[in-house]
Image: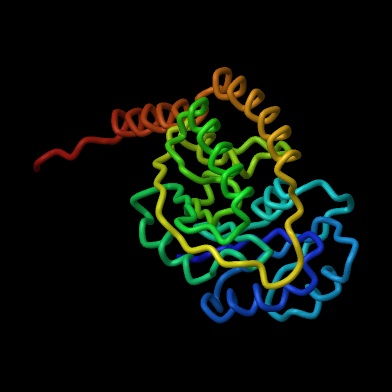
Amino acid sequence: MKLSIVIPFYNEEENVEPVLSEIRRLYPEAQVIAVDDCSTDGTYTVLHSQPNIQVERLPLHLGQSAAIYRGLSLATGEVCVLMDGDGQTSASDISLLLEHFPDYDFVNGYRVRRSDKPSRVIASRVANFVRNLFTRDGMRDTGGTPKAMKRECVRHLVPFDGLHRFIPAMLRSAGFRVLEVPVSHRERMHGHTKYSNAGRAFRGAWDLLGVVWLLGRKLDVRKLEVEMDRREESSRESHRPGVHDD
């Protein structure tokens, strides 16, 4: 299957080369889309020095979700993979996600052992518990983990700031087959996180209210499309000339 691998970057100048080198080594035939979220360091310059990748730069710093959504809009592969640009997720874990296609439409990786500060791990666990309590997406970890989805899933995502944490909830609500598998997690080699616990908690709570409302009001477009396809096929069958014996 053809892959499109989307990686958002924001002020990750020192991580660009090792992240992309690992991906190219393991998936040399994949479409690699690197989206720079209007970095203020040398990230964009380093990205342009990398071979065999597609570079996109946002005109404004709009956040991780905007970079992800822009990358997905450019993807042409049968399966789209999301990776982090900080180097904490391993490209070798992509195979753990892909082995469940085509049986599933979306596969989420959850970090079994977090290589972060205890305060961040605790904050993440609380946030994931609360999110799952309200959205019922069945996921243990959705924030910064590798994800893979069939390209048809992309048009069922609603772009908003914070989208990357609620992709499983949206796709499950749309009727897609969703799975979660364990993946690894590494310490940061360079740079520092762009999120604080307090900021993440406030934004997460605000996003959660909006997503719960959205899921309750969202039209089941996929169900409608399946029914229309079924009726069209039935109509073709009814108008097909019969085969008669001589």
